[in-house]
Length: 183
Image (cartoon, rainbow, N blue to C red; front, side, top):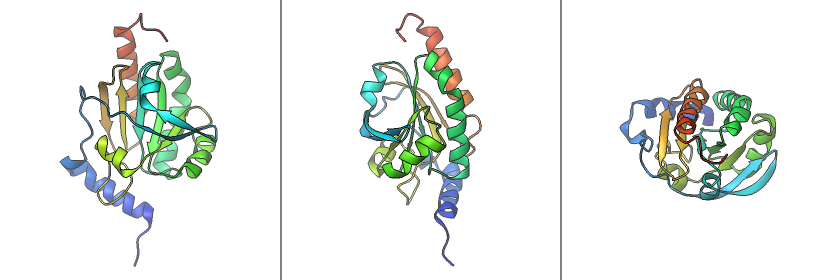
C-alpha cells in the first residue's frame, strides 16, 4: 500500500529528530548566502539573503511543506508576530521546497500577507543542513542571522510551537546588544 507524501514527510521528520546528520548549521557559523524566488502577498519576487541582511537581522525559518497542519500553524504564528519582528528591525522569511505557485497561495492564505516565503532547492536545503533524507524537503528549523551573516540562533523541532517565541527572544537579545544599529 503506497504512503502519502504527508506520511513520508512525517516519517522522515521522526527519523531526523534522532539523526545527527540532520543537525542544522550551528550558532556562530556563517549563513550561506542565497538568491531564490519568493512570494509576498501572492506576488513573486527575487529574494537575496545578502540584501535582507543589509536591513537588519533575518529570521529564516525552514518548514517541510505548505498547507500541512504544522506548517500552517507555524505560518499563522509568524504572521501574528511579524509586526513585532519588524519593530525590532528583523525580516522574517519562511523557506520550503514548494514551487513558487504554491507559495503564492500560501503567502496570502496562511502567511496572511505579513511576510515572504521562498522556494528552496535541495542544494539550498543541504547548505543549511536542514534537508530531509531522501526528500527535497526540509525539517522544521528556525535561524536568526545577524546582519554580518553569523548565525545567532538555531532551533530544530518537529513541533511548530516555540519557533516564534525562541526566535523573537534571539532577535530581542541581538537588538539589546545593538541599540544604535539603524532599523
